[in-house]
Length: 300
Image (cartoon, rainbow, N blue to C red; front, top):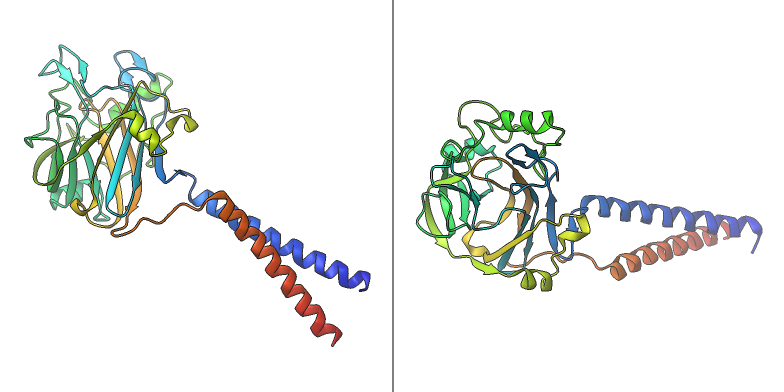
């Protein structure tokens, strides 16, 4: 074999490996929030407003993660706010809790989906101001504002301004703090609690130990709030397809949103490292094979 032939094989092999690495990097970039089957949205660690404290206080939300199997969805929240809520004498009930978790499959912004009654909602905090009677999954949901009775912000623009002016970095997980998906201005326009809906399913509370056994690991993102809250539900309670899910504190002192997708029947597995590297090696071998065939044709 001539040196030219060897160089041609080496060059073609290198190109094949390069393209395989690029494809791998693109895959990693696309699935940057995926880990162990969990889809994570990590919020700013410096935008929770607790009195005069910005960041790290009782209303700091660190992240939300969602995992699915063929029939079950698992939700995990990392935060400093417990399910018992935060005592505040200025709140109507003397306590501020989590608002409800909303899922929007419509492809519309939140206010439009709300006006159409096409939201799904989960009441997971039994002591909050939700208008539905019990915790669980609700369809045909409309949302309401409860910040006015919880010593909260008038609108998102006010929240963002306060957090930023005190050195915080407002964000909303997978959405920017100023994303037009939500109404940013106006009086009492933060819609953070279920107003009406039809109950279609129950939730099962999960302990931190159970979540850890399912592969949950917020610490890999340095999201280490004092509370890890989790629950699961049957996916048949919701449609399949792309969604945006979000929740606020009842005072709108922090919020987080996550983008994802539910598949009915089966969840696409996350590729294992061994599988990825096997694919990479296979692409390299295919490149060598193609180079050899090309050289043989030239010699012939």
